Length: 173
Image 1 (cartoon, rainbow, N blue to C red):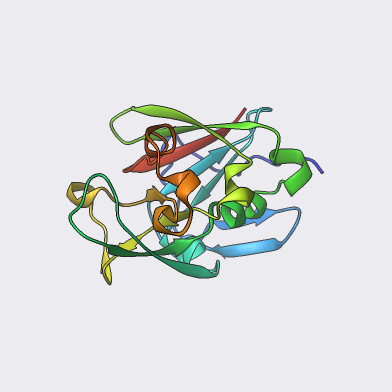
Image 2: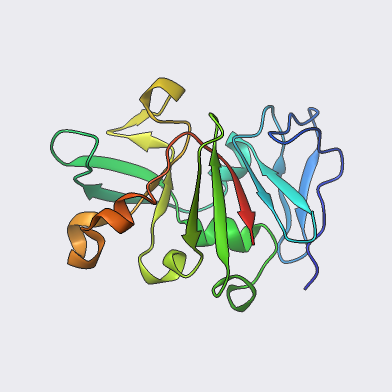
């Protein structure tokens, strides 16, 4: 399946013109864009798809209650599964699972995450923490969250280094 660039995409973080429709070959129309994108997903061929608040909201959201190295006590996070965002961007599981994902934050910090984590551990791209939308100063707008308390394999420094906050871009390598 080919990955199709988003028509009208402007810049790396992408501001979308009002009324622009996001499309993927796998699922058709995602949502009408209502403003600034929160996340872009870039394919190795250079295709880009942007997710704004509305398009992220069309995906099923899930909850993870877990401790983190950066907060006190267990926190409740909500957002779509990483795997759902990757699939909605126009790729299938077999096309993605063996690859790496370079994730970039708003401050240009980058981390490489095995794409297989999306299926092995069901991390979410948290948009909410404890019922509140996450703002930039609160590690938002998106924070990659693993269900750390549910699996001892996730309770190690190697996995902790993958928890990127202020996530703005995912590049499929």
